[in-house]
Length: 361
Image 1: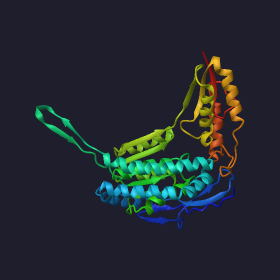
Image 2: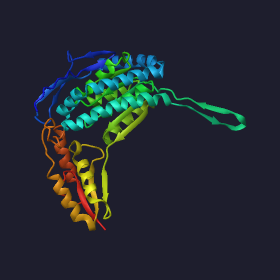
Image 3: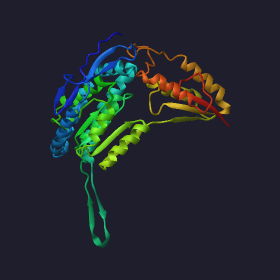
Image 4: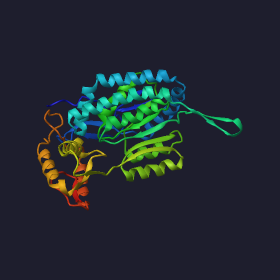
């Protein structure tokens, strides 16, 4: 089970990797052991200014690059991710906590995203609109400009890849800022992109104090679009920052997923699905069930079946082969779970943390 955390998380700015010399650092913990496994450098204002300047130049180059040439690099990045899947997945488990099988699946999904975007970019068609008096209007799709990509810790490599691959495929440059809790796995995804031959300044990676980084990037006229996944309060804050520059914004915010269970369902299949989804990634998923509305005729059987399956969920270190649910990802999460339970308005059940059930007729 014991594996060494073999990673060197760093900033990637204008085609060069930068470590912690002269910079503040953030300690990375293994949530299964509580031990410090790495330190990452935090970007300074100077680092961010250099990233912005490089991204502006990178955009001018990349937007003029033929879409087929872009696709070659994205396909190469996908191939490198597949080659390095075990290394990336192990880093992901050690810094985020999820079982290795889940980490492996997430990493492989990144390769699929790069492949999809590489091909889909070739179909960025415009359209011809008929106008009065025989006129025609032609609509062309063009890259919007440098993109700021801000992503969380629960699916760090997947969410970063979705934003970065889409931006690169369409001809945009991108500055990615993943979560500071999961820097090793995200650094390795960027390393795959760099090793695939992306030109300097086109794709960059920074870590830092989140509010400082977001204010600095979104306060610059260089950034023309924000892509963010995270909480609703932070999303509101970022939207206000983006509004000053009238920047385009794409966000995925929070989640509070109910499950409706009716008498005529296939109960065994339903239980297999909902228990798996409840404990996947220790419940740290935007679509993780938070409450169940169960029709009265099936309620008792549903609770019994849920309890039985929950009792078989092995909790442990994500590197252990028999672990089904790893630890919560960071020290903030246990208190968040307690707060979540305290605010439930429906009867709390003992069979699933952060979940509740209610009979319906």
